[in-house]
Length: 374
Image 1 (cartoon, one colour):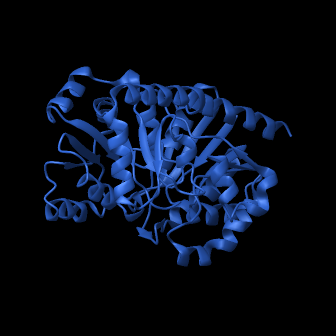
Image 2 (tube, rainbow, N blue to C red; image 1 turned 90 degrees about the horizontal axis):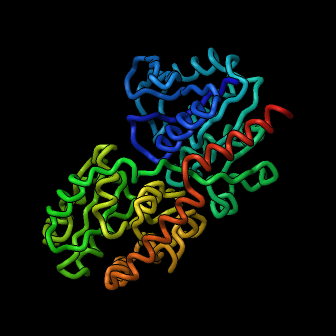
């Protein structure tokens, strides 16, 4: 049974969607579903990679991006060329280029639309793309949302609720990839400090400017370490310098994928200060919860964040975009060691019950069987 995952990009490209697709591809192939990947390339060339695990990744050449969308005529051509080889195409949205490609290819097999997020920021692009999006949602045999709160709040999904299913994102257990010596090294870099870790691409909706302002309100025995690169990295570094917070905030820049579990295990607490529904799920929170770390995140209406991180159980949620409540929640969580351990244990348990990669794969394989048997 051949399945094609049609994604924006694929690792080593970083991002929540890319991480989810990587977990799916590895898990599905391990479960006996021959699953390949088609995505856009950052280069003008189209390349085909054969992975040791037995699957193929085709990266279609791109001319660049426009309004966060790959300009990739090669992707359109590749979908038309490959669609007939697969009984099921699993397309990850939002991705206007993929939607256009499927509209042109008109595949005969089953189509699963995986709804990671609404188009939140690029409203001008949405006006041009909305009719194509509606066509794809109408064509889809199944629409998968990553959380019930997001599915219910999405205007785009409202007409199609009868064919919407919810499968939470899942990740592998990072406890198996921890280097104890590296964890000790990271802790030693901030002696006698309580460490708050945050992670994400340096873009506006991630709210790192809010976290930096909140850090100014934290006690001197607390350090905030933020990992990730992106267009606003230097802007945030300038903000730290202007506020004289070099001793309290360390912007680590991009962190290697295999080093991320060490940062999560070195930290006392994870913070996700995102400000809009563009933060649909928060995969980085799952990594922290798998490490048994409590989370302080934004209570964004219609996002999965306050559903994944349960207030008072696995951590705390606060009003988005407000530095003072964010600082107060962090201080409250760090003030009591017993409470910190209790929240962290509950976070780990919630991850094991709902957000493992194996749970996600089981749900999708059951859905695939049902679709293909219909």
